[in-house]
Image (cartoon, rainbow, N blue to C red; front, side):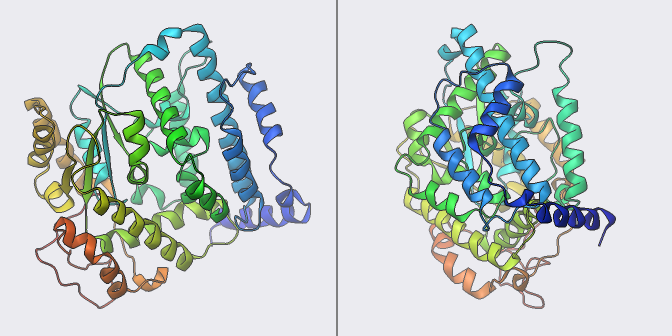
Length: 428
């Protein structure tokens, strides 16, 4: 055990004995802190309060069992989101033209996590005509009014600090302050995001989110509002390319908010996906909780993404949008990235610039295996059985013609997986 881990355990024990870890996190306290920090008091729409209350109640309950770091990080995160909401409202009051921004034909990339959605997203960013939300601007969407803009450097320092708490994170998900970011970081501003269910064990919040009658609609209405702010600051109308596995659960909301949206499903052998996403969830949660159950995480992730696969099966080629769904297979993407991206462009009647084709080749050459580190997962570590999982996901694989990949370090120890074709080096 590292010195950092020992120090954190001692801090948890002291905080527990003093009662700090048992104090409920209060909505009113965090709102007051955000208002003081932002120098504004008007949120405009306050529909976020109920989901925030649900989230904080789950974090304060034994189910989350937050560590001291988890408690402090949660408060910081919530205050940051609330401060951003206040700032967005203030900017809209001063600049009514923000609300007039139009987001035309946004492209949404989704699919099972760890299936290649991030890889495809970053390849499409080699086209300078495309635009994605970046990590630093989803954390701090507007600069401070005084002094130089140091948001990129500030977020880079925060990422380095998190990597000290979670040393495995970078190998699992290489991320820079300037990287394209998932949309879950945007929808988290109104506390309707599976990002919280990934970082924390909060089943009561997840149940509420799944059963709430409004579901994802308020999240995607805010999502559009957020993009308008980014586009206003850019001063140009961009082709937005957006990515998040969570989108697969919100297709109705996407269709309602963005009736001209374009949709891409990325498909991969789910058995290869499950262990990777379960391990990433374990790494993300570890700094924030005092109790971590890898087997429970494995079962939860299997159930969640089986539901995601079923959503894609129900949708098929028709999501009720003007254009049909574009289907991308992981093995095609990694074996011929340029041809695959070109196929996406042609599907939507677009033309891939020749400069982007060159940039894609350069991107792949400079990042062997996408920058990801070696992986060594086993089914038993997360309470899963390969044969059972393969049977559960078989209808999804048959529906979309997904080839089973050869087992390597991802498979059950000593048990090979029959594959239709060899699996090349993988990207996530």
